[in-house]
Image (cartoon, rainbow over all chains, first blue to last red; front, side):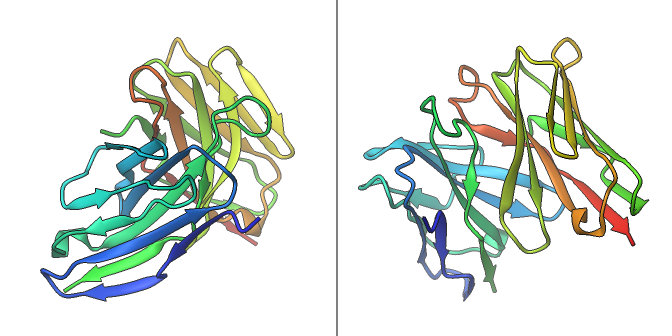
Length: 116
Length: 113
């Protein structure tokens, strides 16, 4: 299994540009989420999904959109990039079904985004 | 809002010593988890302790949970230089946070050889 994959690894955007951060998992996990990590702030939840077709907002959703058309993919869209969105973005997935490793979250390697 | 808060923010020890990190959280939980993050990498799950457990071991890791004080501790015994990383606690409360893991700000551990 590849686990959780994210692309791109690095991205530089100009203010006002839009882009999509890709996230995919091959573990058939129903739960997926996006976090941003800023220095001294830990991880903050942006959006999450408990299954295909279902998404909801986390702690810091403004300026971001998500969709979940398949179990595997959970892209994060920046609608109009701002310097405040400069951060490292992590995608994660987990299964809450008993058996295996329920509730443990598996993280992707991250996308380092800079907005100038 | 951050659910878990780790203490200390930074810890520097010599190889072979034990490292203890503490975590406090705000609401009731179903379980509490600890993650490790090497510099520039994603987080890796270390250990999970359920709300009805008081202590759990995994290799050189020992986690305790005190639900009355809303606190947990992670002990790494006989530390190695390779343990240098940031460590995060994360609380899971299905009822209060829609099943989302809420992370603390982390403890940065440095183990000197």
